[in-house]
Amino acid sequence: MTQRKPTFLLAGSLIGLAALTLVACNKPPEMVQEPAPSITLGTQVDDAVITSGVKSALLADDLVKSFDLQVETRKGTVQLSGFVDSQAQIDQALAITRSVAGVTEVENAVTLKGTPSTVGTKIDDATVTGRVKTALLADPDIKSFDISVVTFKGEVQLTGFVNSQAQIDLASQLASAAEGATSVKNELQVKQ
Image 1 (cartoon, rainbow, N blue to C red):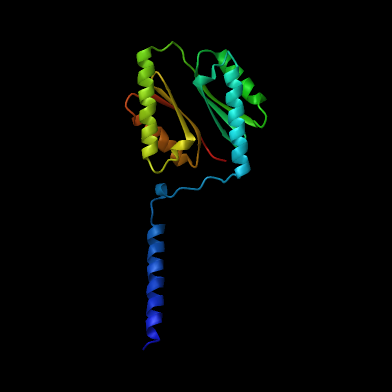
Image 2: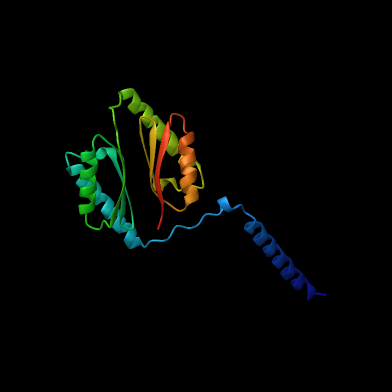
């Protein structure tokens, strides 16, 4: 009789483990996140050095005025985004970025501003950017620290690298739902 107790405990534990496994496998597909392809610490450091190099080079150039540009780097691929006044600024920013050591590819998500904005519009844009960032931070399915958000005249730009297409779609939905967002230009990419 004493030999059966361990058997019952073992059987009960196995049944419990099987039940947990079945419950875990029953999650809806949108809740299961694919892990991002891993990169080494060395690659992360290299990307940070590339990002700093690009930002410094853009800052040093009088034509580009880098304060209007966002720079994201993943495995040597640099993604530029933001709003500038002229095509010449875009061309110069791309040329400068390509000249930085370690850059393997440049993704251009820079947009022309068109007509100048007013102080009121700039304040409204900052508010929209804040709302979008808050929505992204509040959602547990998005790693929002990898997403840059810039707004100009209500147009929200999303750039950066995320783990899946589902995160790209969700980020776009959240940005579109933000009060004051008139449109969303989603340039997010899945991490390679």
